[in-house]
View 1 (cartoon, rainbow, N blue to C red):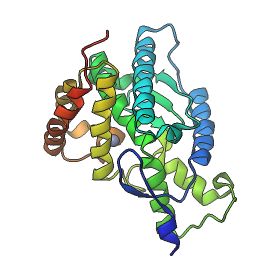
View 2 (view 1 turned 45 degrees about the vertical axis):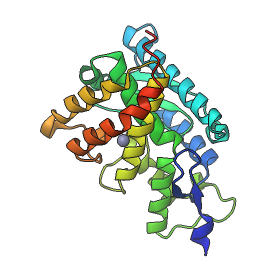
View 3 (view 1 turned 90 degrees about the vertical axis):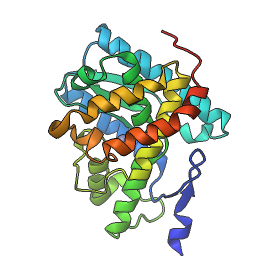
View 4 (view 1 turned 45 degrees about the horizontal axis):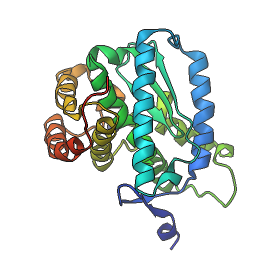
Length: 256
Ligand SMILES: [Zn+2]
């Protein structure tokens, strides 16, 4: 059966994921969309101290991810990753990472993170969604739902339907509610590995508890992308507490 061959076991999480699209193709599409996004939105200059912080945190998390994947024999999964981190002026409380390591943080997130460590918690989470192939998995599920088959070497970017699905799954064009949101499993994975990556990067993972508590207290004004599809707030805090002892093993104290 075709489906059998279309599943791939994630070498980090050990979970079997539907995989109908190639990583290199989604990275190519992500690069195009990222450039387009940066050209149309107010990017904060590199000399700005908040942008410096985004870059510093991002680079440390990326180094931690690379180290973790390499140590677990999964370095190949990061093939094609060329990390970029940009802060963009926007009221939205949001941040995302596209395949290939293309990251955007919105200035509207910073009043909620309040400190560099909480920003590391968010970036750890968003980067995990990317490196664990969660977007690819969502795209594949939607393609299956729509009965779209990708024949051999036909490029995804040549099929208007797959382009539309890509645009709905990833980044700035994401339309919540149109497609399957990140599943509970994906969210828990992003929290779990996000804590480990933040800890390896020298940020105290325990900051995740007050940070997500602040996010939860936003009430009705919850940010659409970061939270709408996330597990119930209380459940998330419970799960974070369960994941904390493992994450703390990776925390050797603050580097900053
Ligand atoms: Zn998430």
